[in-house]
Image 1 (tube, rainbow, N blue to C red):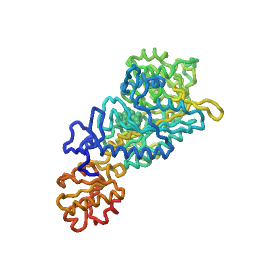
Image 2: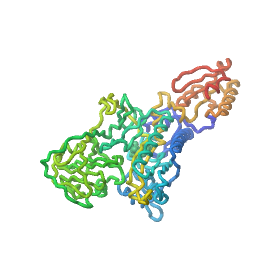
Image 3: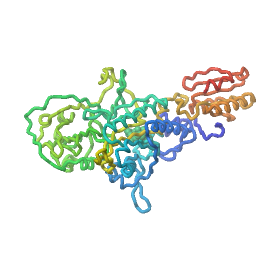
Image 4: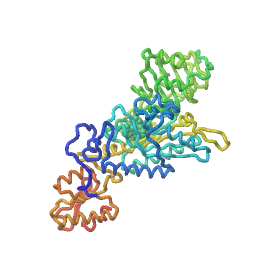
Length: 565
Ligand code: ATP
Ligand code: MG
Ligand code: MG
Ligand code: MG
């Protein structure tokens, strides 16, 4: 490629609209242009980077047995109603109607569509596991679209969905994706940490991990261990299960049978929480002090609209405690199931230590306790101390001190379980001919956000410093004179030679001063610059400069291709 032909409008000034470095540099380096808030056009160099990350992601998905599909962006409301998310997804969902007044949305994610596909096509356990993925635009009407590609309203995501016969299968698929994600971000040349995003409230870990690219500008606070690979998102809670004695026998609770009440459905509806998604623990603190704690073992809080987090619980501003009780049909003191095997709801009219350490073990399907004296009546198998992990603390795994860092979420892996397969009826027949729900996982990579994250992590005052594997071109050739025919001709010759060797090379053949070309080369961030000047070339040499280290050295013209290759 010749720079004179390339649509690469670089800017000297920092655009006023751009707050963070990656956004500023992407505009200045001529990689993207804004069309509307949260919507961007990729110019040729920006698109090259995107395609490189996509290619790495695709290779790693294929290597794990992922099969690529392409699903529609427009999704019919019916499927979202079936899953229960239509009414609870909220304002982030772009909704629209066709000419017949039928409702659709633009996919922010594709659980509904993929589960609908699988329920139609999968019949037998022999077809499982099945890993299906796509790389495609996603749409989310973010409240604050900002920071350029970091938080767009249209963005490119790789989303893979795993379908397994059972939990063990899911675990394997999850591990595959976890490994693939580590490979993806390593191959992109990024420093990252997989962090426990919401360590299991019921003692378990590993229900979900976020992949964080470490950068000072990151929106997420993470802690990571200086001695081992432990890392967690600080905003999510760390749970520390410990076994304590049975509570005292002085309580006066009764276990009563209440078939069919307190379903997760009516709770999720009331809290405006997608029932299909991600609930692990909730604390409701109403005006007049009613506390609700909902514990489920396999969900996280990902999609709940949070007002603030308190030590791992979420405090939601709801209308009034009376309304909560009315909706849930239960009274203060209620401790009972909420429709999931490991679901437990605790309602209290005062904040007691127990509320901060929700108990599990008091659950029995279709029963609940009345007249509970929290802390006395509940047989506590585990206490979950749901405070946040603090930097400086000793790591639970190895004892070394934890360090704080900032991270940008570039990916997340997630155990979904049977939430969607049950809601939509994605079943299969097992070896014994018994019908079962597929056990699902979902796994997202923010492909376009990864570009921004890479820049946040790799830049200096002069511009972007691309890691080689995702650079738009590996090498730029800069002839410093347009008049010296030896310079011009050698530049052209070297350009052809490198191209022939499949080096991704670009030639700055513009009629510009050397200083302008150098500035642009640094700004765009090509990893290697080859400079041809009259003097050095008269000695048969060209100058090689590494963008990252800033080191320059001279090499003989005939050795260049060997050097660069
Ligand atoms: P965030 O917490 O930043 O809002 P998320 O947790 O809502 O992200 P997921 O649903 O986990 O996002 O989607 C998978 C990946 O898609 C994220 O890890 C992130 O890299 C990317 N992503 C999510 N929202 C956006 C966005 N608005 N713009 C760009 N990338 C995004
Ligand atoms: Mg997130
Ligand atoms: Mg989000
Ligand atoms: Mg996420």
